[in-house]
Image (cartoon, rainbow, N blue to C red; front, side, top):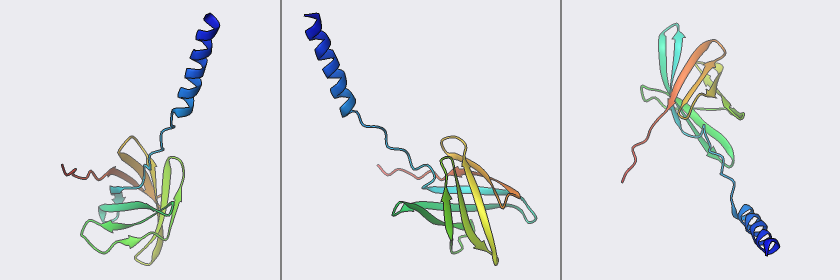
Length: 127
């Protein structure tokens, strides 16, 4: 009787393990981010970074908060806990690195010269 019970317990555990799905990894950086570049010669600069996943790759652009036309990223490099985006600003090739710092925060730098802090833009949920 103990063997039968043990057999059913093992079978139950095996079937349960097969039916469990691993959690799908969250696409952390694919979203809108409000970032502040700290300490530029013209003071702190606020920008919106929009990253979206298309065909398995991150793409997007960066916009000043004045509502100007977004500058598209020429390249996006992803790592496990960071992303580096490349774009052109005032005729210069610039890169911005953002690192994950909590659920909705990022920190990093522009050109390894100016510190950047940012937060995910929270969207209103329509009920």
